[in-house]
Each structure stands twice: as structure tokens, then as C-alpha cells.
Amino acid sequence: MAARIVILISGRGSNMAALLAAHLPLVVAAVISNRPEAEGLALAAAQGVATEAVDHRRYPTREAFDDALAAAIDRHQPQLVVLAGFMRIFTPAFVQRYRGRLINIHPSLLPAFQGLHTHRRALDAGVRIHGCTVHFVTEELDHGPIVAQAAVPVLPEDTEETLAARVLRSEHRIYPEVLRWWAEGRLKLQEDGRVLLERAAFPDAALQVPGSGA
Ligand code: GAR
Image (tube, rainbow, N blue to C red):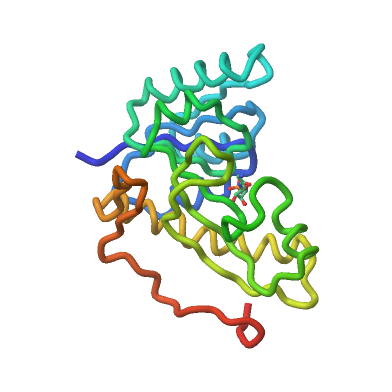
């Protein structure tokens, strides 16, 4: 039987859309947002996926919100909870509940640029290479065992917007691939926190900058 996932979003939902478009060998049981107005909810509903909103503003504490969110997730009995632009910080209890079953994509090459405004900070720092990271979630924000990363060049003429768009294209490439590895049983998180990948590789070679196209 195909494995089940629940996708959590907060806004646009382009990563979620990329996951749906990839027709992965898994069941997207639901897309849940902490913001009822998230554009991604309508996108998912239009594709026949169950959607739900658990509005964080309606809960007095982070704990109460996380409990309500967990209840909503668990009703769909997912094996994996996929964060795709979900912009809330979890309580340790929530992370522990889904230990090894909570995966995230972050728009930087972790451990660089944890937190918000990663593209602006990458430009300010003057890095030549930027990118995105898929990782399992641990209690520490934007930490946790790394599954895959994609690097993109930072070009002299880049603005926050052009760099964000380039990184986003790479997000849409690696997240579906990682979930395919997971669905096919080729991605495992070991007890010691190490990520095991079998027969998993991206076709493109390493990136060196300057010298590569966008
Ligand atoms: C993506 O760039 C994702 O990596 C980032 O939010 C964006 C969501 O876009 N996530 C984070 O910053 C998490 N800390 P999307 O809604 O179009 O997928």
C-alpha cells in the first residue's frame, strides 16, 4: 500500500504544487495550513486533495496550537509530515511526536542562514553560492539531519527576487526527488541521526562559481 503524507503550508504553496505535479508513488492525504487564506490551499483543493486550516491565531498558546495541529494531522494517519513553506516554530513536544517523520525544505545551504530572509542575508554576506536544503526536523530551528542540498550561483546582478527565484527552482527539483526516494524506501533516518540514502543521486555535477550558468 502506498505511504501517506500530510503537507503543511503557510502561503503560496509552490513546493506543495511541485510535489503534487511529480505524481509520486505516495498518497497526499491532506494539505493543512495555519493560515486559512493561504493560496496553496485553493491550489490543492483544485487538484482534489483534502485541505484544512488550523488557524494559529485562534489558539492562546503555542502548545494549544501544536496540539490542534497534531490532532488534524493524525486524523489522516500519515507516515511522513512534509513542511513546505510552513512558517511556524514548533514546540519540542510536537517535534518529538513526529521524530524521524518530519521533513522540511529551507531556502539556504544549511547550516548557513538559518531563520528568515535567507536570500537577502546571502547577498549581504557576499556568498558566491547559495541554495536550499531538505532536512529532517529536530528541536533546534533549521537544524537536523540533512538529506539533500542544491546549490545555485549568486550572480553579480542578483537582487533578492532573482536569487529567490533561482533557489525556488532548485527547491522544486530536489524536494519531489527526496520524497520519491523516501516513498521507494531508499531514504532512512538511522537511530544515530545519520541519513542513509540508497541509489540516490542527482544527475547534475558539482557547481563552481564563477564559471557556471544560472
Ligand atoms: C520556500 O522558499 C521554502 O523553502 C521557504 O518558504 C518558501 C515557501 O514557498 N521555507 C522556509 O523559509 C521555512 N523556514 P512556497 O509556499 O511557494 O513553497
